[in-house]
Length: 134
Image (cartoon, rainbow, N blue to C red; front, side, top):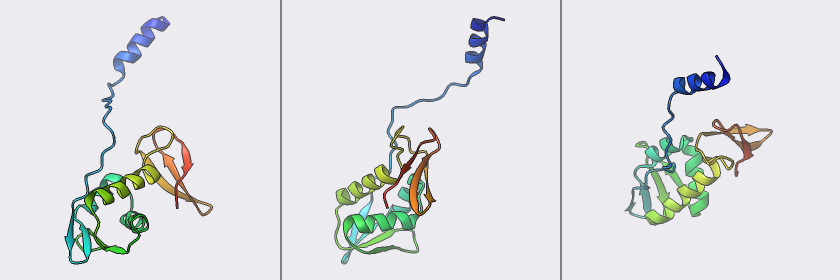
């Protein structure tokens, strides 16, 4: 069996990978006003899609929006003040860029690690390690 035959055989036995140009998508924030608070109804599904700890995401939102907040027993984020859906969407997009998407390959297959006190983003897809914002 020559090289060409082996190559043909290998290609025929390799499963097709379903490639897609579709960007990693996060659900649009479903927000509503409740008194002087903004309730982020689908916070838990957003966190699940991001694959991150809810406390880390709410802390980022608080810093980004300049407010305080907490996660209620239903998994919703309650942020003090009035925030439009577009403002929260921008903050989630900033979080995704900083803590989810790999800066090398652009895939969301990452996890946050702490090494010598610094946060690192490790990509499971390409193996890259890069600093993550604190």
